[in-house]
Structure formats: structure tokens, C-alpha cells
Image (cartoon, rainbow, N blue to C red; front, side, top):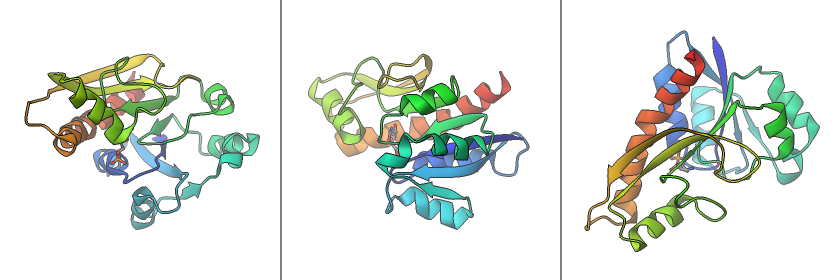
Length: 187
Ligand code: GRF
């Protein structure tokens, strides 16, 4: 059985999709949820599902003790699902090639500092792009620049607004993120 650690700062709908996908199976389970936000929806999910969680602050984030705490779970993957802080070198080095992220656009377009959540969708709509999508990638020390593992696309129509585009993107994310994790675990 593979152990997954999820890092999330928000609602946690991706975390939930991952939990549901692996529920009851023999391949993987979520052993820990890490968040930097005390009021994040993902922590309600952790409480409801009785999954251990860890609330971290900026100081703890780059300390060696965090690496030790995470290593104790022997994770096969650390899955970033809407996690807002840049991963420090201590973690990237300790979990080389084991940290994955999902980005709500087709990288390298609309990536980098400040490009998260609705900012991404606003930028896509402002450019009048006819398509957008998601990127699942490995995490290195630079924002949104690790190796791309998977991209999936959706059409952007002239009537789309931030909310409708966000919905399309979430649908892709909820479908492809768990399945990409499964693929990584099996390969
Ligand atoms: C997702 O759109 C993801 O691409 C981005 O943050 C959002 C998280 O949503 N990195 P949720 O908290 O999983 O609902």
C-alpha cells in the first residue's frame, strides 16, 4: 500500500477527489494532510475522514524537523493540491521526484508567481484564448517549472466567465489528478 501526503491551502476538492478515487482499494491511501491555513476547507475534510493533519507556519515550513515528520510516513508521493506556498529546497531535496503539483492552466503559459486560482482564469479570458486546461508536473525549486507529466485541455467559449471556466478546470482536475497519481505509483 502506497502512502500519499497531500498539501492543500483551500477548499480541498482535489484532495477529496483523490481520497474518493483510492478509497477501499489496495493501491494507496492518504496518510496525512498538511495545510498552512487554519480555516481551510481541506482541514474539515481531514477531520471528517479522520485523516491526521498538520497545520504549519512559515517557520516550520523550512525546518529539518518537518522533513523528519513527513519521512516518518514514508510517502510514495507528496501531492500538492492547491497549496499556496513555494516548496523550500529542504523538501525538494528530501523528496526528489516525489512531489507533484497541479496547475489550472496549460504551462508554461499562465504560470509563475501570482498565477493561481482565479488570477489564472482571468488572464486566460483577458487573452481571449480559445482553450485552457490543466498541467500536472513535478515540483522543483522554481514555481511551475518542473517536468510536465500530463496536460489536459478544455474549450473556452465566448460566454465563459471566471466561475464557468473554473468549473471546467476543476472537472478536468478531479478526473485526471487521481488517475495520474495512480499511473505514477504503478510506473
Ligand atoms: C485547483 O484549481 C488547483 O489547480 C490550484 O488550486 C485549486 C485548488 O482547488 N492549484 P481545490 O482546493 O482542490 O478545490
